[in-house]
View 1 (cartoon, helix red, strand yellow):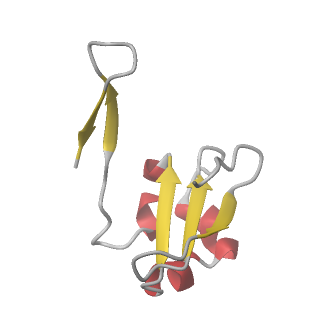
View 2 (view 1 turned 30 degrees about the horizontal axis):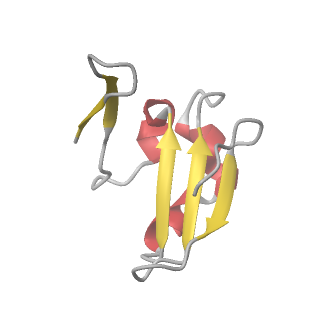
Length: 87
């Protein structure tokens, strides 16, 4: 389970399944540009195939995301707990 990094920008959770070792959950809401994310050394995290990186508000740092980034959009469904995912 990756907890939301509500009051911090990046949270690491150990995740040792299916060849992965870490989940990094980032909340880029308070960042205005990719330059502001530079101190987080995201390129290093992206290069490690043992990491899963989940980013809320990724459009705020789009300039530093890899070209092969998988974009997932969550939409509310017709029912209260229904969600639609668009890849």
